[in-house]
Length: 260
Ligand SMILES: [Zn+2]
Image 1 (cartoon, rainbow, N blue to C red):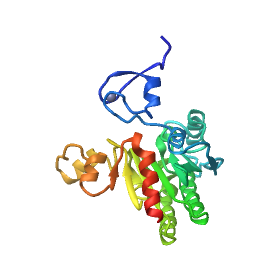
Image 2 (tube, rainbow, N blue to C red):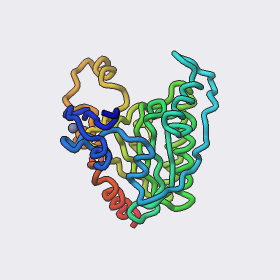
Image 3 (tube, rainbow, N blue to C red):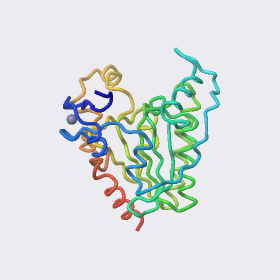
């Protein structure tokens, strides 16, 4: 049997026919578990047809010549080979249910979707483009947080992006943040939570620090479902949790509403 024809669901453990799952937007056909998808699959799902990508050639200069178990430079190279992207974010303009929308989607396959100078610059440019061309903006987060291989330079992106979002807000253009599994660290602490609407996919892990760190700090056991999308919705941190199969329609409806 050729490898990759079948896929095991991470939640219900059912063995599924991959083609069927892909046709179902990578949602389990048995239990509706949402599989993680790439940035390009995300754009394909959200746009009606072809899109125009921009800033695709931006690359990290590896300013610290960082090295842990292996050099950062070779991690960048691996990420590029794995995802065919130059960093962990793809931004593009296309049509969503006939509306011209700018979408910036994070790529988890590229060093855990971490936010370094390139992601920060690309998100900022996407915001500035949305403002200049009067377009609604959707940012799809899928990230382990700031990219530690770029040290404080990656943390500085949080302030840069937040400032650009404040300017976008002043010009009255809608920004919808879509939080997917996982959205953590510096990404949650900046743009992912700054949407006019913060929308998440079911079951998505969303948080700043991990549960173990929090438990050790506050010396308390955390409640069931802590840091999952549904828990956050219940506690007022999110506006909507939307099934991926309803997402495009819902986002387009929100954009129409916010644009009037
Ligand atoms: Zn399942």
